[in-house]
Amino acid sequence: MICILRFLPPAIACGVVQAFPRLVALKPVGVKLVKPSQPDITVHASKGSLGGLDMPESPISVDRSKGLWTRCDKCGVILYIKHLKEHNHICFGCNHHMKMSSLERVNSMIDAGTWREFDETLSPIDPLEFTDQKAYTDRIKIAQKATGLQDGVRTGTGLLHGIPVALGVMDFSYMGGSMGSVVGEKLTRLIEHATQEGLALMIVCTSGGARMQEGILSLMQMAKISGALHVHQNSAKLLYIAILASPTTGGVTASFGMLGDIIIAEPQAIIGFAGRRVIEQTLQEQLPEDFQTAEYLLDKGLLDLVVPRTFLKGALYELMDFYKNAPQRAQGSIPFGVQHGMYMATEEKIRRKWKQWGGGGEAQVEDGAKPSYKELVSSLEGLVGSGNEINLQDLMKDEESLTAALGVAKDSKVSWVEQQSKILQKDKNYTIMTSKQ
Image 1: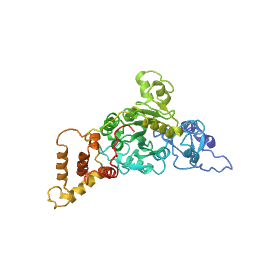
Image 2: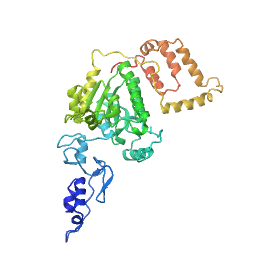
Image 3: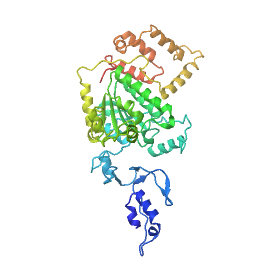
Image 4: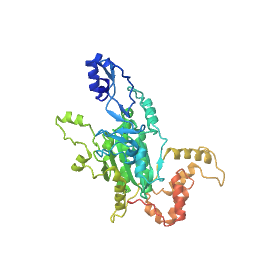
């Protein structure tokens, strides 16, 4: 009887145990009961008890970080994990696209040795002191230990078949890929960097939506990211490609997930805002079987492409190459005040330089010493005192204005300006590209 129970679903097995407790308790004569090895599948459901037994938690989630074998979430076929990873986590039996970690996605999309990660040490806090079954701080520590990430997104730059791109990849294994303040900040910084450097932007979305433990602060990230994308797309006229993996729901779908110039989804990806059950209960109607799938949304016009994971990198390269050689692409410009961002490392450099130069701005500097912070501000105000906006294209054409701007920017608080000045000194014909690349 015990051998039969091993192959039954948990709910049915618990019912059998409750109905025939004495039968299950009997041991076969001459047979030694051996505890079976734990499979690479963990089951989670609402905790409870039935017939004196503790019920596990559901739905079924598969941990592929350990062991040699795993099971397909859709067809149930047994898969060798090593071959599965080589096949981009696509089932050999039914072509079901299983979940991938953010690092695996980066390795599959970016050329080897070209990935440069941003803000990998940025970590969330608990501003609301939120506690449900566990404290929010405890959930953060558990997620960080399990995934090796500080939060649910990985951002950086790299080469895609030789084309420089800015890439953000969300990780569903970190608290369901929920969007908190750190996720919003990292994506905003990535977008601003792509805007300044003239890079095409790609974000792989897989998330359950805004993170409830941060309340209104998580909802504010929708507007912040959308505002940065507005400058990137409509002002700088640069490309943004949204890649939707399963699942993409909630606030991510309602903001940057659906703002791409080109929106690509993986086959059979679940994409929506509210859940299927909530919609059915609200409308009192039965929804189609393929509702909220990528193919359904493609048929309704919400998506541009449905691309299998195996061909995703090649498809992105074809789009980038076609876009780069477009004959009538618009010329863009970056609004004044958005040319460079203020980041944590840069802010620390400002504090140290300010203290070194002028002792907080009060002490007098010696002749020949580096200028103080106040002197930098006054010189910058003198340069732009006319009140007119600075046009980067005009600035690059005027050699005198360019020399004056570089003189003000040299040894100042923004490190990227120094890099640009070195390039300009090497090549006078260099032009900061703010158009579509």
